[in-house]
Length: 611
Ligand code: AGP
Image 1 (cartoon, rainbow, N blue to C red):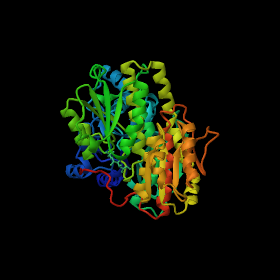
Image 2 (cartoon, rainbow, N blue to C red; image 1 turned 30 degrees about the vertical axis):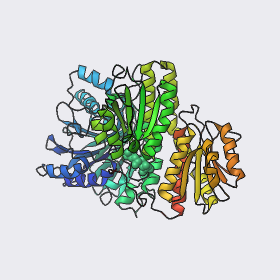
Image 3 (spheres, rainbow, N blue to C red; image 1 turned 180 degrees about the horizontal axis):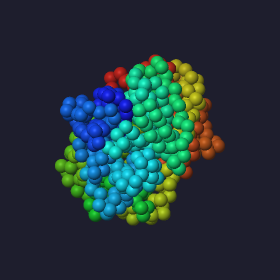
Image 4 (spheres, rainbow, N blue to C red; image 1 turned 60 degrees about the vertical axis):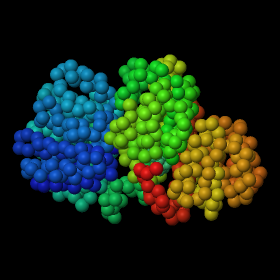
């Protein structure tokens, strides 16, 4: 997720762009840049300053020429590290077209190869740069910038919003999108485009949402929107809540970041899956930086992580063992460090960390490297310390997560790890191309299934109401349902401060059952061992527990006082991605009923850099 702003017709274009970028920083902040129309040329400046890139950019633009039009970008890196060279805007070979982009271009590698063969010179590692070279070819062929954008977007696959500016027509800003939101707007005679309303509050008073594959041509006071065939269409007007301030707008109409991030989960899963299949159908993990040759002697995989990331690692263990037939262990990072572990050059250690900075996980990875193991990190932050130090990386593409309770990053971690497990299966020859393709096809259905699970919030709210003032919760599951139960318990305790423990369902009778009494709530994840789970549920119900179960739509014999239904997922290894959603919603609902600040729960921090 990146932030985009473009404007035309404002004598103070640079100030307005920098102001917009500051407000968009919550969407990404590892680098930032601006391009301005400068007479018959373009002027560009970029900065890559970690969390203060926009401030650095503002300082670097002190000598900018006066300009009435420009485009700006604040980046959350997905392809290529957060360097100045990778920062947007990107320029074509002539330096006369500038472009900013949010999203992922799936077929960038093939496009880059053919553009390079036609003489284009690339200056970045991004997937974005192909777009500006494609525009360059269209303009060279005589197209205007609007037609050039339409033709370019026809050749690319993926999810994106893009905005371009060309020296040849300096009053014109052209924008297009697919699956990633983008607004056009006006305030007085000034025309704008932006990723979201927060960038434009106080400047614009008329807003229009671009639809998929539409192209907007924005000039001072004028908007022309066309569909993918070039037919002019009536732009979709949007009403902006007059009470919104910048923070409210950043929350996009949700009450808090947690609910916004919950609803961003389908996108986070879809983006994490984009771009993982090569032209021949095989798995491609660009930044893994390890080949089958490097991994040929690996005889064990160890996943290290904390909290929700640990639970994602637990889900992955099943995928690695089932698909790649490789022994897999999951370790709490803070425990691995001080154990007499048996790690060596034949061990692949995978650190799972949303932030990539959690000290326990970082030190566990360092320990593994000292022992000679190869290390890979699954992280949401491309420039994080873990990502820099590890031998390879697989990035989740969830965009910044603001709420302390991890939701969209947790789901993205699970699917990223599952793709890694498929890559290992491919290299080890434990799954053939057809079997891998069939799992990948099933994974493509996950964003829709997650959206479906989210749409059932009302039913979850009703269960939360029915639970009244319950204070004691057990979350139980077996096999792949066990990490889902653990994550449900963690989410609940974290934001509601209610006592919630996760257990393997079979363990209940070995001790914790002594605590079950009328008033205790047992949340049971029924799949994948639903028959076995039925007897564990019966044990709890017999002691007076209120049972809430998570069951697939297709489970006709689901047990429990309340049943939270989820869409059926054909492959049980993938089902946790969907099953965890009602448990996130339940935690959210109960926490809100208690009046808690769900984004900033007491005693906790988003990134834990202490031992
Ligand atoms: C999850 O809701 C938590 N806030 C926490 O458990 C988190 O997952 C853990 O601290 C690990 O963080 P990381 O993924 O950034 O390493």
